[in-house]
Image (tube, chains in turn blue, cyan):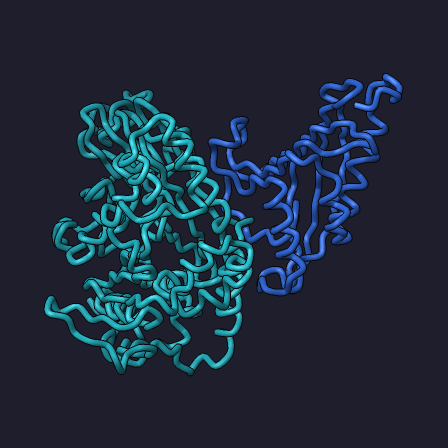
Length: 164
Length: 421
């Protein structure tokens, strides 16, 4: 951590503004900027079981390290994937923010996400609880972990050809 | 002509050895008929033994459209019961899996033992002593198991499961070798739905032809070794009709028997895993696990609802004529190294499920089939690929090249036999 940085804990406003930025980048397909929001060891996780915590040893819908996030983004832009050609259009709303913990170097933020997708004449909604582990880097906040718990994760889902 | 009163004549107009009528995907009356004639007159896969390892363990499933409970009783015997109270038809279990000592109907409290027998009826005096509880057990199916695969059928007079599987048994045994010396266990599943007929997915399990096209984005994302191993159109594989609607598609002939070639070089992609395993295991154990960790090089299609596909089980659940649920069940090594099971989870997540790099593209093209099938209903769906060079083997099995539609021909022939009966 930069020793010149003021020792002020991350507050709700800063964390909210950051994850709204992330949401905006995903809805507008700014994948390069989205990839840059992460710590090198950051994990993007979409679990199946509601109580799952040991994601590494559990089957998930997605358990992405940096390399997998890059591949996921490439898949959306390469034109090779028939389910992502075109990519679904999405609009996501984040609300009901709560800081579960906060310090100078990092925080854990929980919020609700309502996402509507539209593709090939079909509109669908996916509702999820999001939990972010954010850390402060030299040039602002970074995502160290994002866990997307879909409320219907244990049900049979339709193909999700975009990044939740 | 009514398709249900003059079946064989009508069925000839629907299924020929090398083609099937488009309405097989779209006709609600056919769907209704096949849920009974196909699914209630054959062996249907309901569980893997590792899903219900202990007494009291259960899972819910379906046989055709009928909801069932698969449960292991106190003595270890597996039962499959129709999930319907004998009183007024409510389900007695709405939990997908768990452990219990009984099933109690939430409506009027009728309770059933694990073997299905009716044990308790609240306020029984209201029946004036003429309710013979022995006459009202949960309706139970016949259950048989082969190498951990549990099947059920409504038919008491059907051939034994072992005979039904017939030529597929050898391939089941080969498939189970991917435990790498450990028993196979399930380790989670992806469930997803697509708006199309169940037979579209059934066909796909032995369809190598689509792989390099539909899964181009998966091949691009995969490492170069994985990409090379999935170059299945050029590896000398084959499809074989195993009888009774079953078929096998050998995609990677070098990965048919995982206990062979244990001295082959360890692939680059598994070197880190091998090094981790070597800290606690001898070299031969490491080699066995690493060779097995990616699964087998074939897809075994067991008619009508189970695929033993490379490294996972594919379970088909028809919902409506144009709606199907697919389950991709991840497999692991029971008691095996956590690192190997983690590797298998990551391999599964990469391709399978609603957010995988493979399944959504499959689902998209199946969706397109269902949509396209609304047009040209009198046209045939062509199943003749590889027919002209199909050979009949000594054991009577028909075999053609890897991209042949031999497996689909086998499945539709069995479909027709059951629909005619």
